Length: 346
Image (cartoon, rainbow, N blue to C red):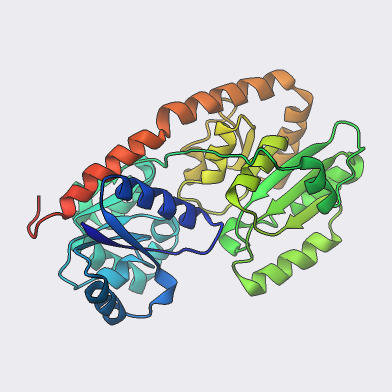
């Protein structure tokens, strides 16, 4: 089939990485996948023209609101992959909720990354009950073997000679839902008493106004660094070399950064929110914190307890292998896409 795939393709974001991976799964099954950035289109009529021009027979959208709303009423079958903010945030806005309900009425299937996301979606839109499937994100990491960690530390203005250096890595696009400033104050205080600990925030500048606020605050905070977006292979190499990966989001669908850290055998400290708690089991596959002070307490514990670090890393790797198989994800999408073949419901 010729498929139109709409997603938000801002480079180096979780959505873009997920979209590229799903596209590869579908193309491996022999489909042609026309991947387009949902932000490039204002209205369904522009999509109607695109469907005609590209001769698309079916469609897929990542994010029920941003992508899904553009697929309504085109008389071609489509499926939806929930993004996270659609179910967690957009569903609370009445107009968006109504649009999303209509999109789900037309969709042949919807994919949720976690059981809890599926339950939330079903509670919001009970009519979609029979068409929501759970498929967690499939993880494959590819660290760049040529990456130079010392050069990265120099670029980040981190004192490499600090005895037992511990770099905590926060990977996120600079936007409010990711809350990159949540730990900055507490971390800065910790750095002042323990100069060998650093927090490095890595990611694209998504929200220009908020980015200015982040830059200003980080500039004044000792022990905190801000680095722009990086190619995925380099980012995976940074993850592999850092001490721990941190997630401080207000809401998450499923954080690929957390799963990639587990795959690369690096400990994870994540804010205790439903999307994170679905993949991080406290003191088993990672550590969950509810306040900046609790984060510092747990981070200190991790630094001083190599046995805890080893156990978390071993369990995290085993968890990703079992529940986030790239091959299983491929099989699921290749099966689901068959629901878009033919003009009538399965």
